Structure formats: C-alpha cells, structure tokens
Length: 197
Image: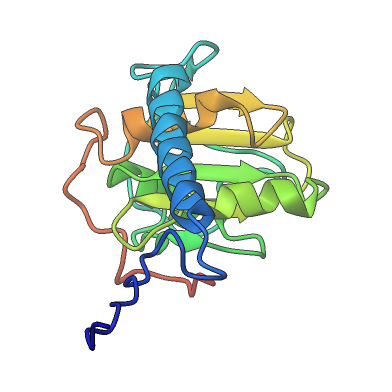
C-alpha cells in the first residue's frame, strides 16, 4: 500500500467550466471586419476633384474702388468690383449681410457661399460644414438670388440647386485663398460682422 497521493490534474483554460473560446474569436472577427472596411473605403472612395468645376462662369467685374453706400440690387450676388472699404469677417451668418462688405472679402481671396432662405435646414447644415476658423469661407443667405446655392470667388461664380453637389467643395478648394484674387493675402477677420462661428 503506497502512501503517495495521486496528483489532481491542473485545470486549463480549455477545461475550466464556463470558459469559452468565442470571445477571442469574436474579437478577431471584429478586427478583420474593421480592416476590410477600411480597405473598402480607400478602394471605393473617389478622390476629391480639383480644378475649376464644370459650370463655373467668369464674371466681368468693374474697378476695385472703395465706395460708400449700397451698390447692388436685392437678390444680386456680385463677384467683384467696387466695394466698401471694410471687409466682412468670414464665417457663417444666419442673417443677410451687406454685399458691399462681402465683395471686399472676395478681394482678399474669400469664397462666398450664399443660399436662398428657402433652402432646407439639412442643406444649410451642409453649408455650415464649409466654415472653419482657418479658411476664407463666408456663408450667408440672400433672399431672391437666382439659385438655391451660389458659390462666388473674385470674378468666378457657380450656381447650384443643392448643397450636396460635389462641385461646391471643388469650387471652395480651387478658389479659397487663391492667387487669382486681387489681394489673396488679405485678412478675413478684423473687419465687420459677428458670424455664428
């Protein structure tokens, strides 16, 4: 008769009650799915177009004189010419601004996105997305303008029927701070107006 005790088997992760390999498997599956999703985004996403977008019209602009008073009719979206000596601060405005100040911002290389007040709020939110503190973008409503959305740079203009039109972003990329403006190094802050952001 031996006094030696039989040793009990040491439990392993495979034979411990309630321990399952599935959490690790699910984590691996999720990781693979994320990687495949990122690859799909890179492969199937279209690069942002560059250059002057189709439909952009060159506008004849007059002399760049500083003048006082109103120069433009209601509903007009000027693309340059005479303007007020004080520029409009870039940013988003929910109320109409004076075009004479906006034109001075265009002279400094800003892009002005104007919209008809009837534009649905979801579309207005899209326009808000083009505004950031480091960009020369001005957004404001203009009652009675010919198109729902008009995007304007000095001497250039594009009319659109939707804020989702890819040409809007293409225009902003092409003309915001562009050397085609008379004073592209001019400021878009320190002028007139208090944008919402």
